[in-house]
Length: 200
Length: 200
Image (cartoon, rainbow over all chains, first blue to last red; front, side, top):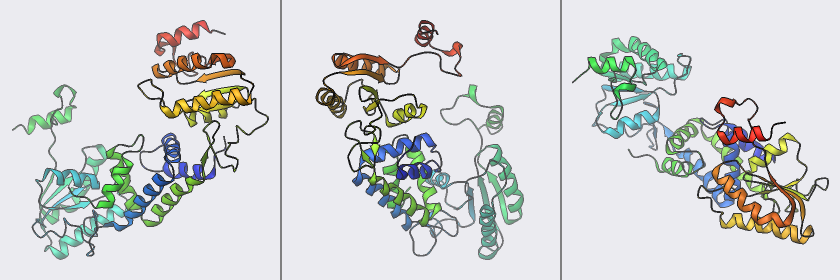
């Protein structure tokens, strides 16, 4: 069935967004149409206002500073020689929220299912190597490779460990075990094995 | 953890959209930030262009006509005395796509879980009653109450049937049965009972 071109365009753009399929894009389109002009203006303005947000050239997290460096990277009270490599901005936010990490980060960007690093991800890792070489005398105290314990995450963790082991005193990953509220019955073998080995 | 205000606002607005929760709103925000200004401009423009789409004052589907009436309602080749009452625009689109219905529609709008008609939905039903009374001599040939066979849909179908039975020669609902590709084993009792009763 033919639809008005602005609706077709909306569905085309929104169904290409992460986590939104064609059906939900159509649903959203009708929702926007029903909400009317004032609501749509506000949403459009909100999207446009994102242009005030920049990406840190050191860790690739977001910021609004003139310096080009985010609040975390420019915080002199944080340990510059303790570095967590994470996949996503939201992983950084989760770690920040527990308030127990006082180092800096490197955001790698979404890992592909293929297990291959994208060009942009390689550049980010290279920039960290450069930074360790030029600013930190060639060696840091510890790098935590904080990637999800998925097959791709594991593969990438091994790759990064191999690449950085000469540039850091210690290289670690997050501990595996039964999550709080989780059930032993439903834990897979590897998780349960790790939990047993790291019993405290 | 503190986030830049434009990001906070984005998450607030997008997590209130149907089918998008706070986690996906955050994910979308970072996606938009990474895509950059040109992409965000295009999305904003697409949302703003929806204002060219109007809602038909007869059936409440969308259109871009000067007349205030959609293409379906203004099509003289369609039977004005055959009316399908549907919940959503997408239901209308699904029925149009099979190309076997030559009547007009009334879109009721999303049914609430409470099983109670909203004020706006009552107005839409009243406008149909008025229209049958004033334009069609008080009686149509058939009304198909094409609502989902859910408990709310059933309740609403009964309500509407009661209200319209004096205004139509026939009042029907969609046939129940095993869907194509469905499995008898997984059909619920009511569906299987209907399929047996309506065997062909």
